[in-house]
Image (cartoon, rainbow, N blue to C red; front, side):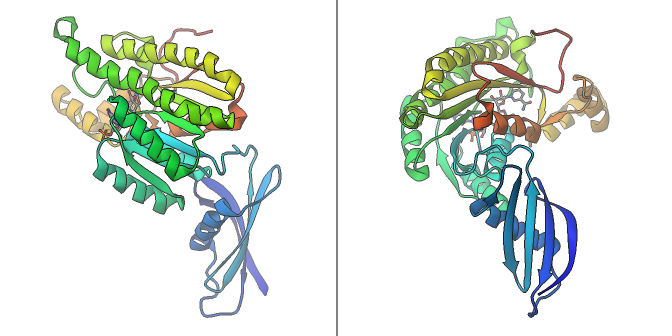
Length: 339
Ligand SMILES: NC(=O)c1ccc[n+]([C@@H]2O[C@H](COP(=O)([O-])OP(=O)(O)OC[C@H]3O[C@@H](n4cnc5c(N)ncnc54)[C@H](OP(=O)(O)O)[C@@H]3O)[C@@H](O)[C@H]2O)c1
């Protein structure tokens, strides 16, 4: 075996890998780099050799062997854990499911539309090399949540992490004024975003308590901290109140419960929202996007992937010190000081 060189740093699966490739004489020699790194990454997720700061794997593919070393300043210790991500078929939920899988978690993605769920599960499985379980659920319904939880626990073997993300995002259409708010509109939203999150926590918590460990992350939203949508603010504030209560009740059982407040976040729906605003305001889509970016202090629309990084951290054993609290993830929205 002759070392033929190295690819100093290869990006793969969201990580930086140092890949040292070695050619073994054979029919397909000399092809190391990207495809090989990908194979190695997927192998590594299953059989890594781990030291506190490095993960190393040896891979072989089509005549080339390689040693890949990943420096991990902070391994999230998520490998082998399982998760349910509600609203996992698209948007923030899908980004969270992807990021958890990249960290070694097996995920049940759950929402109502079965076709979209299955397509997402296939796409993410191919991208990450992990198993995904698409399970239909309506989180607005007790029986449906009970059945989904049982199915997820059976498929995954145990339940470690719940990410509550299934709800209609605000800010994508006209907001009802006081005279337009009906009881149906209010209860429909609250039943899914508040009671729906609570339902899922109620069904999943016993599985976590059995093992003495768990993480519940509730995706709420910065409408909790500003006016503009009465129902939007009320439901998001309620999620925060629920979270602190659950955190205090479940904390002694090893279960941390937290909230992430996204601000305006780029998802698959954002291009359509920008196009509609551009049409109605007589602006170009670029101008609308620029204006939207001015709403926070990082001056760009935060991406669903940015939210997913935060959720992955909160889901990890390393986040034990955060319980019952809120992480605002809007890129710096507003001028109020929270202390
Ligand atoms: N995107 C933003 O700018 C933003 C900002 C602040 C807060 N948030 C919050 O983040 C969360 C996700 O928003 P998003 O933008 O990612 O939304 P999205 O792209 O519309 O995705 C919503 C997900 O929830 C599912 N869902 C909706 N109602 C459901 C129900 N009753 N039962 C089960 N699944 C249901 C949807 O699938 P089905 O329709 O097929 O069920 C979909 O998978 C929401 O709580 C939202 O309020 C978003």
